[in-house]
Image (cartoon, rainbow, N blue to C red; front, top):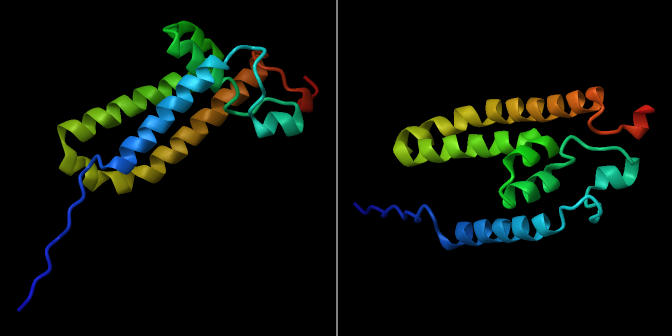
Length: 139
C-alpha cells in the first residue's frame, strides 16, 4: 500500500508577497496622483462624465496615505470601512486560523453582497446629497 504525501504550501508564499508589494506600490503611486487636478483613471467617468460608485477612493487613499483620516472619509467613506473589515479579517485569521478557513467559504458571498450594497448605497447617498455631481442624471 502506497500513500502520497500531502504537499503543503506556505501560507505566505512569494506570489502573495509579490502581489501585496505590487498593491502597496500602486497605492503609493496613486496617492501621489490623488489631487483634484490629477488624471481621470475611471472608465465610467471617461464614458459618462458622471461619477461611479468608487469615485473618490483614489483621492481617499491619497489623503489616508498622508495621514488625514477625516479628509479620507470626506472623499469616500467606503475606503475606511473596507480597511476596517480587512483589519477584522486579519485579526480573525491570526487568532483562529482553522475556524477562519472553515467559515471563509460560507461567509464570502454574503460579505460580497453586503459590501456591494454598501458601496452602491454610499454612491446613491452622495448623489442625493449633492456631494458628487451627476451630469448624466441632470445634476
